[in-house]
Image (cartoon, rainbow, N blue to C red; front, side):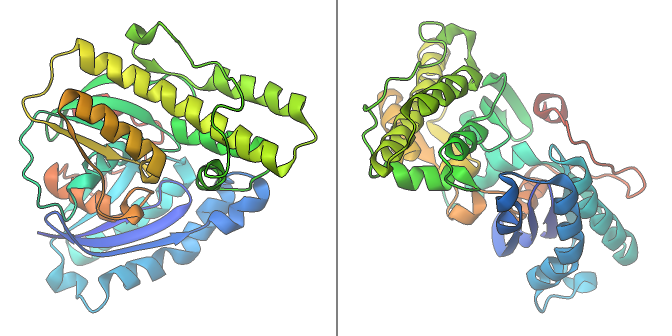
Length: 339
């Protein structure tokens, strides 16, 4: 089943062609440089830039493929995401579905992150398995009973992990997108140089991820340490990332230790923060404690927002919808949409 997939959920204009779970093309045009001067995504600018590039990315993804003859269905992200950005991709997908008489598949962006490690994967997965989405907008730990059936074990109640890393980077004037830059700076810093409060220490049974308090504590620390030298910035970056990851691992460890393990031993991890080498290292170490193997996307490109994961999710859990009924849902609930 060949699918043309489209994603315009935030600040990447993306299109891809997938065949079952195989990625045939994956085109992502990033707007990061345009949003950098604002220190974050400007929704109206994102919408305008999506409109300028959507035709180009679709054409690039299709290559020499004939949409009428070579494509079986069209998939598009309907949420969650920026409302006016989502609308661009949905409008394009609707137009193509009507014009070429193709089935239209609505995809939950978070579910696509969970399933992204299955793209081009030869690993035989027997459900149940664990899943973790760590992105700029979401931090959710789930048990995947089967494709389309998920049990939320822990999730954020405020900032997502990726958002917290971006905000910490902004406090250090490291630019946008900040998380990736922060990671580079941590390599030169001492993660024990500064003491920051680990969220909900001793209360992991609440099964939540929370970064608002850590962010506030970091802001006060940065203000206290001004003027900032290069060495201070390196150490501050390393200390924040270390504390943020420590909190994540502590909560996941509690869940793994206190809830029945799945019948198989895989841990699917997706989302933009999944590319972080230190995080992968800690998750692998945690997995060894419980006999669980880590499975991440085969390419860094599939960790951030992209359309290939949308195509894979559309194949694995197709939700067909008439073009006249499809609509954006910026606050789409993961659990309600997929269970």
